Image (cartoon, rainbow, N blue to C red; front, side, top):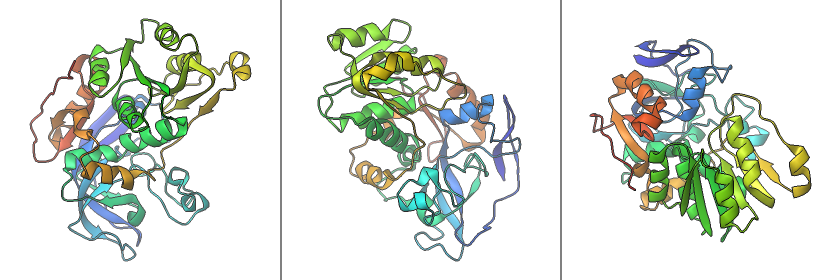
Length: 357
């Protein structure tokens, strides 16, 4: 089969690799029908995630069709259309029993495209299939469902829930890429007083406004001042970091109010300075986290009910074999306007949907 293989920092190749096989009785082999690219994949290609070694098939988000299952798999069978979660869960260790699947110590956690071969391929082996894939309702289109493999549960759990968003809060989302935009949508479920989006790309700020942000500001134009003006000098109740660079994390700590919350969602490849000399007396809570995907079933129900506009984040579609072209478009989002790029599915021609003003 064909797959996108990491060759080392800055290098990938769409090439022939061996077909995956069931190795454990809890495995499923899934034919990949629709797959997408994550900002974390870009961090991997840059060399920011040293656990990913050359030869690894990338990707951790997909929708597909089960073609084979191990003897212990009970919840799906060949022919089922499923969402492949970015997190695998053994279901037996301490953390899985607590619903903290991202911290699985039984061979799961974030493994796909990280420590085992991933989803940017024609087929993928999924370990612990009973807890790591979700049957898709017939009403859910594959290109919509794939966005629940990672970005929606990540933004909801690591951003909205960890940040403790409450009705009436002023919430700032720094980074209006796919994760940040999903955080804007997730925050809306809790009736915030206002949502402010920060980014460098005007196309992404326009997308944030179209998805419900009450105010937007370019990161180069002193967003701290806008937040100060809108909150009468107090600062935001919750600030979410959705970029993954030191400068944006430090920006978040400058915008949060005393007693407020900084929820770090972004994947950081470099050390970040924590200015405790400024923060210690302000009673600031800072949370980090790898998604657990425990919210995925609930989000799927919302998607099936038409209450989660995931498809509005999709700007480009490609054929599966256009993986390298899709990476190029996604990596130049500031120029191309890309939010989420989707590969495969019934509509294979690349399309671009401009963000609404």
